[in-house]
Image (spheres, rainbow, N blue to C red):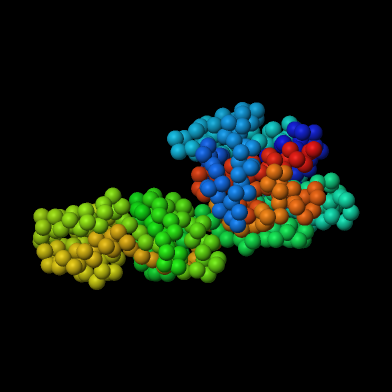
Length: 392
Ligand SMILES: Cc1cc2nc3c(=O)[nH]c(=O)nc-3n(C[C@H](O)[C@H](O)[C@H](O)COP(=O)(O)OP(=O)(O)OC[C@H]3O[C@@H](n4cnc5c(N)ncnc54)[C@H](O)[C@@H]3O)c2cc1C
């Protein structure tokens, strides 16, 4: 995006890419569909030391502006009701092809299989040292992304380059990532997928509540509801705070409604065992372990349950608590929090406040978005600003 805008404005642009092709994350994004932007994005959809750093770029690349830009490169968008957008083709490949073609047409020199090793400024020019040798440039943009998904070529190199110029780097942490739980139970329920409400607790205080799919796994838990709470959970783990989640397996009922539903059901089939009856409400594998947790024998006929035990079951179904002890790591994360401090970057130009001619854009900065096209939105927006400015 940055290379395209800079070249369109008359800049002589060279793009370094250490992978054998550009845009691998675009290809992998949105399950191969590329959730390319969100029509509703504001700074509130981002985290970082100063999420409001995103306000100006998001305004510059409003949805309307982006749509016009997409048409200019031959890309038509499909806008969903919740503001997510995908290419009309529903294929991430079409986004990459449109961008790559536009970049080539604009005259950008793309050097693939070329890793940048260092960036320095020995005089009034920058010296870029790469696997293809040394070259001098008037201006440099660091848009190396984050460490998330190293299998797609992600590196922490941008942090290193920025640190060489004395930029402050906030510790990186995985985000939009699965969580590890401090319990053997999830692995026994591996494969169970269900709709639930997940509440995130940090140091015992409720910080976020979301509804969506959850999926128990050998390492812990995944699913969209988990990805949605993962930024705050992962950041808290980084800060060594106590992190836990509670899972509500039947969010459609409040506690009282659930309790009376159980009482009614138990009264209508008194001789059925508790495992069978609960199996009609929540996934069977969860029943076994929920009963273990409640210390109720699965073979107990429901007529033998005391009102206290029924209450205990209702409570557990709605608030099954697990301590979170880790994330599933950068390899499985979609994005990374932390990065180059935005305090030392000009939000209106993306230029470093410390080094003239040095620019930053995208995920290398300490801005991380929610799931839903927000991360691309900030990357496109900041890239566009940097590209335009660099060509001035
Ligand atoms: C599986 C997956 C799915 C995703 N889905 C979505 C989605 O649907 N919607 C959304 O908004 N976001 C999504 N994201 C996040 C999104 O892909 C990123 O936020 C976005 O790509 C960031 O753009 P960027 O240009 O800052 O970094 P990147 O896209 O990571 O680009 C940085 C480039 O720099 C290259 N590089 C790094 N170091 C060097 C070096 N030393 N020398 C040369 N080249 C180097 C890398 O190879 C890479 O090509 C997804 C991410 C993943 C991993």
